[in-house]
Length: 173
Image (cartoon, rainbow, N blue to C red; front, side):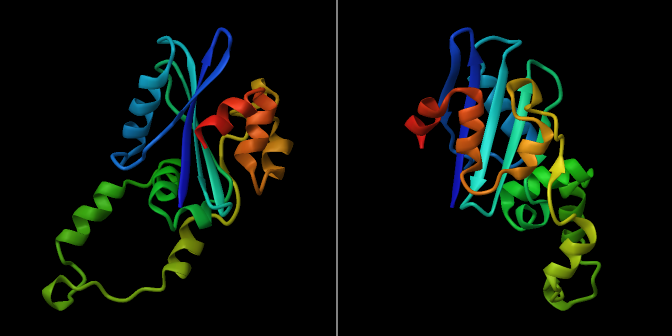
Protein backbone atom coordinates (compact mmCIF):
# COMPACT_ATOMS: atom_id res chain seq x y z
CA UNK A 1 0.00 0.00 0.00
CA UNK A 2 1.22 3.45 -0.90
CA UNK A 3 1.00 6.74 0.89
CA UNK A 4 1.56 9.84 -1.20
CA UNK A 5 1.31 13.50 -0.33
CA UNK A 6 2.25 16.82 -1.85
CA UNK A 7 3.85 19.53 0.25
CA UNK A 8 3.72 22.99 -1.30
CA UNK A 9 5.85 25.73 0.19
CA UNK A 10 4.03 28.94 1.01
CA UNK A 11 5.07 32.23 2.61
CA UNK A 12 3.63 30.91 5.89
CA UNK A 13 5.18 27.44 5.81
CA UNK A 14 3.95 24.29 4.09
CA UNK A 15 0.57 23.25 2.77
CA UNK A 16 -0.11 19.51 2.38
CA UNK A 17 -2.53 17.59 0.25
CA UNK A 18 -3.24 13.89 0.04
CA UNK A 19 -2.50 12.62 -3.43
CA UNK A 20 -4.11 9.87 -5.44
CA UNK A 21 -1.61 8.30 -7.80
CA UNK A 22 -4.17 6.29 -9.79
CA UNK A 23 -3.76 8.44 -12.91
CA UNK A 24 0.01 8.87 -12.56
CA UNK A 25 1.88 6.70 -15.05
CA UNK A 26 4.98 8.80 -15.71
CA UNK A 27 7.21 11.27 -13.93
CA UNK A 28 5.70 13.96 -16.15
CA UNK A 29 2.24 13.09 -14.79
CA UNK A 30 3.57 13.34 -11.23
CA UNK A 31 5.32 16.64 -11.99
CA UNK A 32 2.14 18.07 -13.50
CA UNK A 33 0.15 17.01 -10.44
CA UNK A 34 2.74 18.59 -8.15
CA UNK A 35 2.84 21.84 -10.13
CA UNK A 36 -0.95 22.09 -9.82
CA UNK A 37 -0.49 22.05 -6.04
CA UNK A 38 2.07 24.88 -6.12
CA UNK A 39 0.98 28.10 -4.46
CA UNK A 40 2.80 30.19 -7.08
CA UNK A 41 4.58 29.42 -10.36
CA UNK A 42 8.06 29.56 -8.82
CA UNK A 43 7.11 27.68 -5.66
CA UNK A 44 8.67 24.52 -4.33
CA UNK A 45 6.57 21.37 -4.16
CA UNK A 46 7.67 18.05 -2.69
CA UNK A 47 5.95 14.86 -3.74
CA UNK A 48 6.45 12.26 -1.01
CA UNK A 49 5.77 8.60 -1.76
CA UNK A 50 6.13 5.72 0.67
CA UNK A 51 5.38 2.04 0.36
CA UNK A 52 4.81 0.40 3.75
CA UNK A 53 8.25 1.27 5.13
CA UNK A 54 9.89 -0.76 2.31
CA UNK A 55 11.06 2.36 0.48
CA UNK A 56 10.30 6.04 0.15
CA UNK A 57 10.84 8.58 -2.57
CA UNK A 58 10.97 12.34 -2.75
CA UNK A 59 10.41 14.31 -5.93
CA UNK A 60 11.21 18.00 -5.67
CA UNK A 61 9.94 20.57 -8.13
CA UNK A 62 11.11 24.17 -8.06
CA UNK A 63 9.01 26.15 -10.53
CA UNK A 64 9.55 24.94 -14.08
CA UNK A 65 12.93 23.30 -13.36
CA UNK A 66 13.36 19.59 -13.98
CA UNK A 67 12.28 17.38 -11.07
CA UNK A 68 14.94 16.25 -8.63
CA UNK A 69 14.45 12.72 -7.33
CA UNK A 70 15.64 10.59 -4.42
CA UNK A 71 14.68 6.95 -3.75
CA UNK A 72 15.73 5.30 -0.49
CA UNK A 73 16.15 1.77 -1.86
CA UNK A 74 16.19 1.57 -5.64
CA UNK A 75 16.17 -2.24 -5.95
CA UNK A 76 13.10 -2.58 -3.74
CA UNK A 77 11.35 0.43 -5.27
CA UNK A 78 11.94 -0.86 -8.81
CA UNK A 79 9.66 -3.81 -8.02
CA UNK A 80 6.66 -1.50 -7.57
CA UNK A 81 4.93 0.59 -10.21
CA UNK A 82 5.59 4.03 -8.73
CA UNK A 83 9.07 3.11 -7.57
CA UNK A 84 9.90 1.77 -11.03
CA UNK A 85 8.73 5.06 -12.52
CA UNK A 86 11.24 6.94 -10.32
CA UNK A 87 14.14 4.51 -10.67
CA UNK A 88 13.68 4.26 -14.46
CA UNK A 89 13.94 8.03 -14.66
CA UNK A 90 17.04 8.11 -12.46
CA UNK A 91 18.71 5.36 -14.48
CA UNK A 92 17.73 6.86 -17.81
CA UNK A 93 15.66 3.86 -18.81
CA UNK A 94 12.82 4.40 -21.25
CA UNK A 95 9.86 2.29 -20.13
CA UNK A 96 7.96 2.99 -23.39
CA UNK A 97 10.74 1.45 -25.47
CA UNK A 98 10.56 -1.75 -23.39
CA UNK A 99 6.77 -1.91 -23.80
CA UNK A 100 7.04 -1.46 -27.56
CA UNK A 101 9.58 -4.29 -27.86
CA UNK A 102 7.33 -6.57 -25.80
CA UNK A 103 4.47 -5.99 -28.23
CA UNK A 104 6.65 -7.04 -31.17
CA UNK A 105 6.92 -10.61 -29.78
CA UNK A 106 10.61 -10.89 -30.55
CA UNK A 107 11.24 -13.53 -27.90
CA UNK A 108 10.11 -16.42 -30.14
CA UNK A 109 7.42 -17.68 -27.81
CA UNK A 110 4.03 -18.75 -29.08
CA UNK A 111 1.01 -16.48 -28.76
CA UNK A 112 3.15 -13.71 -27.30
CA UNK A 113 3.60 -15.47 -23.97
CA UNK A 114 6.68 -14.08 -22.25
CA UNK A 115 9.43 -16.39 -21.20
CA UNK A 116 9.76 -16.86 -17.47
CA UNK A 117 12.51 -14.71 -16.04
CA UNK A 118 13.94 -14.36 -12.59
CA UNK A 119 13.18 -10.69 -11.88
CA UNK A 120 15.55 -10.57 -8.93
CA UNK A 121 18.52 -11.30 -11.20
CA UNK A 122 17.47 -8.66 -13.71
CA UNK A 123 16.90 -6.04 -10.98
CA UNK A 124 20.23 -6.80 -9.31
CA UNK A 125 22.09 -6.25 -12.57
CA UNK A 126 20.34 -3.03 -13.58
CA UNK A 127 19.11 -1.31 -10.41
CA UNK A 128 21.50 -0.66 -7.53
CA UNK A 129 20.62 -2.03 -4.11
CA UNK A 130 20.36 1.04 -1.91
CA UNK A 131 19.75 4.77 -2.27
CA UNK A 132 19.61 6.41 -5.68
CA UNK A 133 19.21 10.00 -6.78
CA UNK A 134 19.91 13.52 -5.59
CA UNK A 135 21.19 13.30 -2.02
CA UNK A 136 21.16 17.08 -1.65
CA UNK A 137 17.56 17.71 -2.72
CA UNK A 138 16.49 18.60 0.84
CA UNK A 139 19.77 20.07 2.11
CA UNK A 140 18.51 23.66 2.00
CA UNK A 141 15.59 22.58 4.20
CA UNK A 142 17.83 21.07 6.89
CA UNK A 143 17.98 17.44 5.74
CA UNK A 144 21.56 16.92 4.64
CA UNK A 145 22.96 13.91 2.78
CA UNK A 146 23.95 12.05 5.94
CA UNK A 147 20.53 12.49 7.54
CA UNK A 148 18.69 11.54 4.34
CA UNK A 149 20.70 8.33 4.06
CA UNK A 150 19.96 7.43 7.69
CA UNK A 151 16.16 7.58 7.31
CA UNK A 152 14.27 4.29 7.33
CA UNK A 153 10.95 3.68 9.09
CA UNK A 154 8.69 6.74 9.21
CA UNK A 155 11.07 8.58 6.91
CA UNK A 156 8.34 10.92 5.72
CA UNK A 157 7.59 11.85 9.33
CA UNK A 158 11.26 12.65 9.91
CA UNK A 159 11.36 14.78 6.76
CA UNK A 160 8.21 16.61 7.89
CA UNK A 161 9.83 17.21 11.30
CA UNK A 162 12.88 18.76 9.64
CA UNK A 163 10.65 20.93 7.45
CA UNK A 164 8.58 22.00 10.44
CA UNK A 165 5.33 20.64 9.03
CA UNK A 166 4.65 17.44 10.94
CA UNK A 167 1.09 18.46 11.83
CA UNK A 168 0.38 19.45 8.23
CA UNK A 169 1.56 16.08 6.88
CA UNK A 170 -0.19 14.07 9.60
CA UNK A 171 -3.46 15.83 8.77
CA UNK A 172 -3.47 14.17 5.32
CA UNK A 173 -2.21 10.76 6.45
